[in-house]
Image (cartoon, rainbow, N blue to C red; front, side):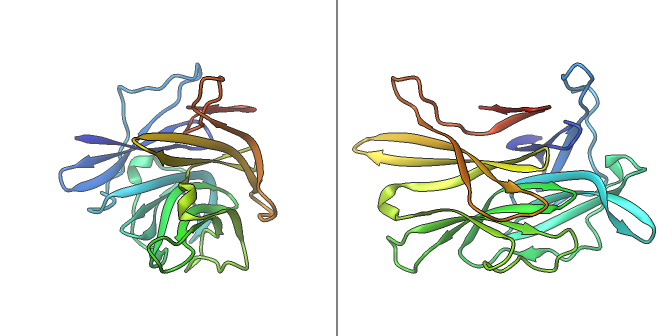
Length: 249
């Protein structure tokens, strides 16, 4: 079994981690204990494997906001082979009962890369990297799109979309490599790698992207720093879910 670096937390702080089993990918859930540690002795895996394609991002919503046939469901969203896919399990059942059937995967579009996901009762939030032109030195645009739980496709750029950054290729390539929801607010981390001679310099930002219910508006930069001798740091990932705190590597 090969574990990957793709992981997320649900609203209760349970940890979900992508791993490869043979030629397929699946997700393992580790239950959070009251003291904040995890029960690594009893991993829970769904009964169905998710994909034969590499899973590049995951997000989990355990609010039970999805209703079908009188039952309520939790959801795990994941990106595989350029599509947004989903696995459901009933709120009254274990994560092991998760099933990928009954959901038409949503294509994310040609030339679009999904770099991070987050989800709650308001929907699933998709961070994308898109070229802003067709030439080899074209710039790129970073966006976050809000997708309803029952949506059939991604929203257009005129609705439920926030522009995070517009960059030229010469300025270094920037990614939104992490999203996390805390108290109904969507936060993100963007990192940029810039080459100078034989050296690489990494910079990063902590972003307040917006309210998940009334999504939209202007992104607020809460912190911007780079690895340097003055004590700045480049934020990389959200590595825990704690009340009133963002824990960042």
